[in-house]
Image (cartoon, rainbow, N blue to C red):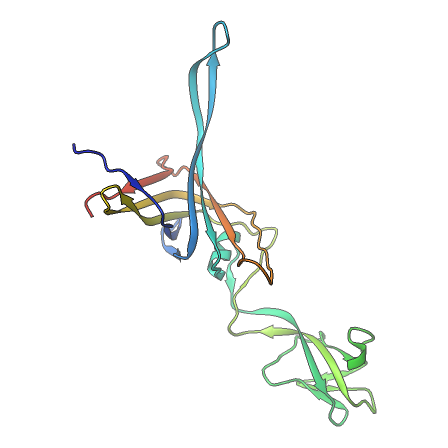
Length: 243
């Protein structure tokens, strides 16, 4: 056996995330800034003799975490974190500034409001007293003799170009298998591929997403707990010395 290779790291892992049950890939997380792997375990001791020294170590509760820090965000990542499926329709409030013509307002083409969700206000009474109006298709009929500018609110049906994740009290993330790849740099100046396998990992449910108009871009951390699979595997750490 030759001299062991000494190496150091200054590169993040690219991750391929697979559904644990089917082992089908579900997301490639190749945009993390930091990936951190941690192996944990409990240690308890038997003591004996004068001075109460430790004599025997017992190990247990082996586990760990794999954490990723990202500034690039994707809907697919939020789906993995929350367990919420990605849906392609959504509803959201929309505000329009419209001018009356012949006692009516015309909702622009491309905007479809859900039934019975429209509220209309005079421009100088925004969010004040709603006007009594009737709605037919894209036309809003105003009270008699109404002229000028108006503010219209309604719940819009969004049916294209949308990804929605609905987080409910009954929504929980699924277990995954994670494959990681990066490189180590040896003291011989060569690069050595380093790979890891987290055999069974579950996303922690807690996360914080800060939205700000100043400072650095927001950083989101997703942390996976490492569980033992059916063969008691937690993680493989693989260094390829011949590539």
